Amino acid sequence: MASLWEYANPRKFIATSDRVLPWVGTMAVFCLVVGLVWGFFFTPEDYRQGASVKIIYLHVPAALMAINAWLMMLVASLVWIVRRHHVSALAARAAAPVGAVMTIIALATGALWGQPIWGTWWVWDPRLTSFLILLLFYLGYIALWAAIENDDTAADLTSVLCLVGSVFALLSRYAVLFWNQGLHQGASLSLDKKENVDNVFYLPLLVCIAGFVLLFVALVLLRTQTEIRARRMRALLARERMG
Image 1 (cartoon, helix red, strand yellow):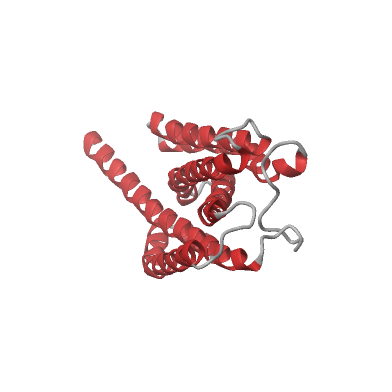
Image 2 (tube, rainbow, N blue to C red; image 1 turned 90 degrees about the vertical axis):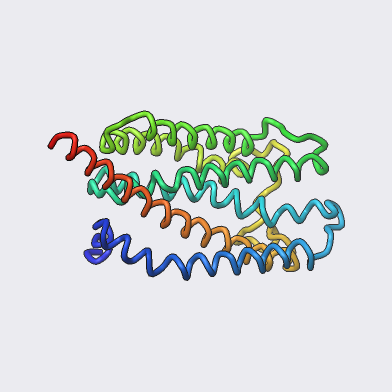
């Protein structure tokens, strides 16, 4: 645990992420290309949903990352509140736009999937509604960071917002279990084999999920580096003004 806190040092974090980024980025591209090509071109149509089922290879990974990105921000925000490590606050800030894009992808692909299956682009289903609220929290989080000049104050307030928004991140994940009503299907991936999709869809889906996870990690590392450098630039400019 003591060695883990070494990465709270911005220089240590940048040096380590510089070594890791090329590998993570390459693996992300590889998994995404293999998973999407496999899924879209080499899997059959579903006997009930037809070709529309193949949206699963974008929708499910994006939805998973939309939720888990917020949970990652929650952990980083808690580290900031408890330990006051600036890298953790900046990592949470860096993850927010990525998570917001994942949420938009999940909502858009869900609408494309839902229209031929449900006969409508949108319903006020518990999971869809909580996902829409989660997107609003993402946008509010990003706006709050941009609205406050003092980085420490912004980190404090956005950390509180992140704690509140975590309720909707969890609701987005478990809404189908909490409320039986609603059009949204159950989980595509489950410890219960009866609820999982068939292996012909399941295996390429796992590769796509791995690609989305690696892409998220690569983007957050890159954006965190950018946030650290931007913070340094602001500090240097502030010193020059005072001097």
